[in-house]
Length: 233
Ligand SMILES: Nc1nc2c([nH]c(=O)n2[C@H]2C[C@H](O)[C@@H](COP(=O)(O)OP(=O)(O)OP(=O)(O)O)O2)c(=O)[nH]1
Image (cartoon, rainbow, N blue to C red; front, side, top):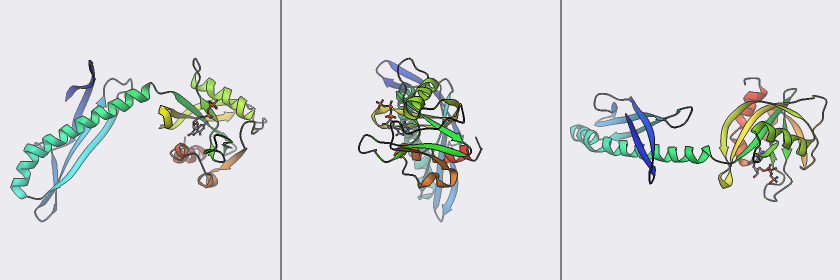
């Protein structure tokens, strides 16, 4: 099904949806117990306006209990309500995608050397001081992510890095920022990172990753950092 979702006055977004689990009523059903049926309506939603064609898979499950009457209510009323619900969700997801598409970015480098990850301990602001993060910072106007990472690593650590692939998801930060992370290595393995603006730096082996008091957004990256250190990336 293709349709347009009104986002703002005069702005309509093309969306394609496909029912992925359905019988000929648009619902799939399984028996849950005496007199009870579980209904599921599943949708794949493609946000057509994103370059990559972002795919969201959604489904809603509910239990209905009133036999034939329940089935009639499901098909006539509830299914319509669920479709409206999913449509509302499409609009909300679309809204977030649009905001993230133009969000300012903080880049972070997962610098790996001899199977260890470089972590730095923040010295400011007060409420973040003492907690651990990846090297990086705000991307400035006219800079690429790679240039921003290279600049920050020289400023913060006095080392040159070679930036590789993106890792993990973009993580939302306070005040509308997004944190984007990249794998990296030391350009010259003989250079030693120093805490020029931080309290401390350390090389962390995979088995100690979870011990550090990471900034909250970085915790969402721990699985990807583990995979990177284990050579799975
Ligand atoms: N560099 C970095 N910042 C992070 C991480 N996780 C996380 O939530 N942040 C947040 C903390 C800050 O609010 C923001 C980036 O701040 P920053 O102080 O490193 O950036 P910056 O050097 O460009 O900032 P500024 O002090 O020059 O204004 O992102 C991380 O792993 N690395």
